[in-house]
Amino acid sequence: MPDALQLLKSRRSVKPMELTGPAPSKADIDALLTVASRVPDHGKLAPWRFIVFEGDARLAAGETIASIFSADRPDATEEQRAFERNRLARAPLVIAVVSKAAPHPKIPEWEQLMSAGAATMSLVQAAHAMDFAASWLTEWFAYDRRVLEAFGLAANERIAGFVHIGRPARSPEDRDRPKLEDIVTRYSASR
View 1 (cartoon, helix red, strand yellow):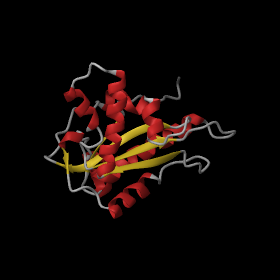
View 2 (spheres, rainbow, N blue to C red):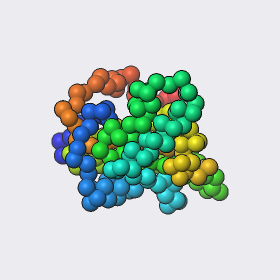
View 3 (cartoon, rainbow, N blue to C red):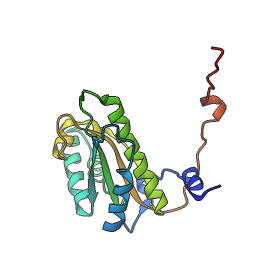
View 4 (cartoon, helix red, strand yellow):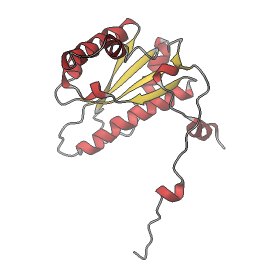
């Protein structure tokens, strides 16, 4: 089996709290983003972009998340606020993939959204190929316009995913995967 196929078959998600440092270097991040940007993109629109949260910026972003959470939940405990504050600090690096899908005369928005999903998955696969581990998440704040505006997203932009990247603290366990007979049908000419 080619090494690339083995790599694809061995990828596992690792929970952000199970990721440790050291964080990817600037050269590593550039390599990750280069791979993530090499995805199908009908019309060459680049209907996605990336926001890198590293170092203290992860904590600053967490303050924004915690502030909005607290405004909505004045009864929240300090433990809950601290959890929200650390949302983007659980892993050494977090990269948000932003979907910029917009109406276009020839390219359906659906295709643009799928391109952003492909960029997100390519980022996850690139992390795995570089001996990092990753977790693709969208949590409540990925859908909160106040958070998105604070992170610099325009009104038409959405989060495709927050990809948490680091070194696995332990070897990730595999999970049950769907059986092919449960998810595959074969089209027949006799239909």
